Image 1 (tube, rainbow, N blue to C red):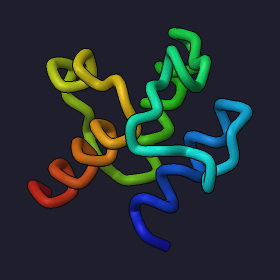
Image 2: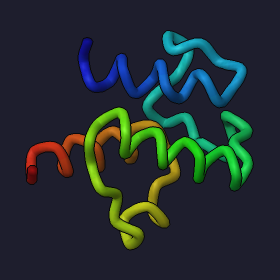
Image 3: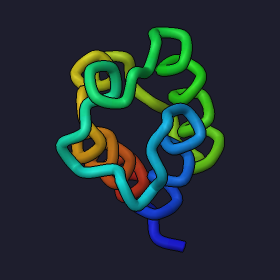
Image 4: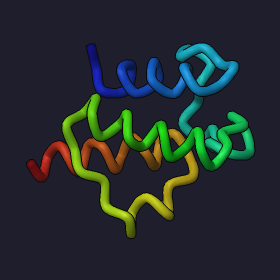
Length: 79
């Protein structure tokens, strides 16, 4: 399974959209209605699912699906 597909499957567990409906410019809070608690839980699952360690300074700048995917890919390449 591709990183993008795996990522969108995970996102869809936290919102009312199916993985196929998620667009790169979809914003977690504004478009997908993530609460702060949802987002924090989601970040923990991202770390587990992709075996990465998220960096606080990067997390605060994540707003969209594309930004999060880019961060995951960067972290996986750096490992």
